[in-house]
Image (cartoon, rainbow, N blue to C red; front, side, top):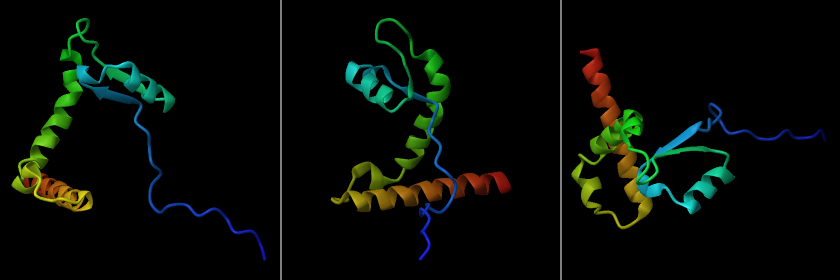
Length: 107
């Protein structure tokens, strides 16, 4: 029998983000060492030194998306006890948000 090759996952290769942007609350030695251990560059405003205004240029996209997702009451209140049920509804909310955005673009 010949050698069997390594099985790859289906789909595109996963890409790692170049930078991680976060709030001032995440500026701690533990978080920074965790990110360095994964070879990620942290863009976190330092408390008392930097303002978060420059980071806000990128963060608003994430905050907008989170507000779209939590516009669904089932996700906001968190009726689900099991995490996998919550993730299923989160995926459904993301699909609905994308559908609504695409519907606006095509009309």
